[in-house]
Length: 412
Image (cartoon, rainbow, N blue to C red):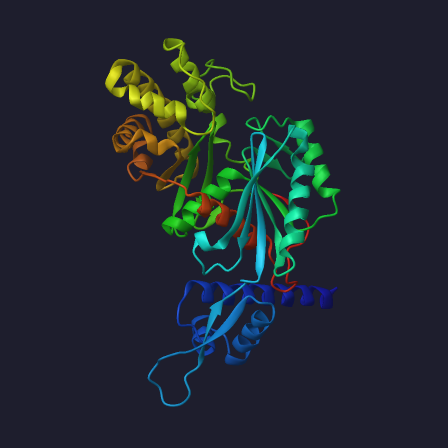
């Protein structure tokens, strides 16, 4: 027992040290073995051994450049992050389709360079998401494994990914609890390995954290698309797991006995200000409005254009929107105490004036001691940033340097 525990402990320490070396090289320039040992407080033999191991698996490379330090003697060779021979597959499940991407794992490259391939694939029925994903994974692997190494697949969707019930629940994708369990079962039974399924708000929040360098901040990321979702990050770590079960922000009640939500409750934030609710409010007064596709911000764009033509209608809808959103933010903020609120998705269409009005309503409604430190900011996501973030989250959460791979099927 003692020998086994010691072996496990040594393996964990080795894994931790390998991760630290890789992360340091990735985020710092002009790194040599000597500089690495000093920065991470390692002995030179230990540092060199770790570097050699990472070089052998393709995580690092020596590019031939020399460190210019002005010292007498031979200048050491610089080390850089690699993994350029490795790729991840990213699948974004959308209504009736799957957006498939192939992402290089060379994290030093720009997002645009890292996205090697991207294309949509159709899905006939909600129950087919699992089997269709396996088909896509196998097709892309066959093509790319000729010249690259497959690291794993990261799947992102709007909904709850539940590790305890081994299932998925997604109203935007029309996946009920029974169908969600079948989808997960199809993936597990496929024989494929190294697959993880994540809630989209966690990935979007992770992308925003990296974009704005928020690793040392406590922030709440809120996303507006067809529904309303959120993820809370504490100094670089997501609250809970990446399944979205602990931060169902869109289903907090802001109007008791209000509109019925797709989840079955009444007065959810999503039911009051989500895109479907916004469409319903517009159709009350403008029955002839054309049908826009959901998930593209078209109804919000239409409403904002009415600012000039029908300011009264625009103002009333905006006032209710701000009231309900502020109420939800105040309640969430008293639970997790963020110092920054990032509004992603199509929130930015409201414009800068909206942020000021929302902040005033938050200050008026909420616990003043907490709300006085709260800041609001828009976050406009780029497609490539999201694709790369999905691959990088999979890598950061499940890749093990000691085993040189990602193992298993993971939910969240």
